[in-house]
Length: 228
Image (cartoon, rainbow, N blue to C red):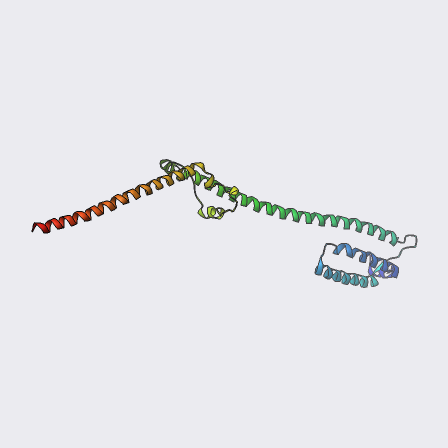
């Protein structure tokens, strides 16, 4: 269609039509900026306001085909349908937003669970290594040589998990509750006391021998002098 025909048969939009267009566009803004937050929401609102203003200026000079009153658009009906669609869209956007929040929460929980699992694996490794070390300390020396290469000890890892505990019930191994070790300690203590006791007797004997030696030397000296 040529421009002369358009200029001859078409006419500008009526003010009522333009107003209806402005209302439809303005009512769409809340739906568009619904997902924005804070400063971005304000900036987006200003940007859309300028866009609607530019569109309205274009509508002032826009030519449209002539139409009869019978074929006139029912802007109220269109506006109502548009609002219905906007409400449905707003609900969908809200559901999406809630799902994103839930997904973010689940992601955070997954991260915490992963970190906890890593720590538990580390703890398990430390405990298993320590138990193997404790088991090796109870082996016969000949057996220790057989098993010396079976355990790769991570000393730093062991130290980090072997901190003193106030509650003995939390000990992985309590020497006070190890009956075999207690018996060994008692036996060693008994031997030490016996050695100490016998040593005291020997000390007395040594003392007597020293005294006798001194007396004998004196007698020998005296006998030597009298012989002259």
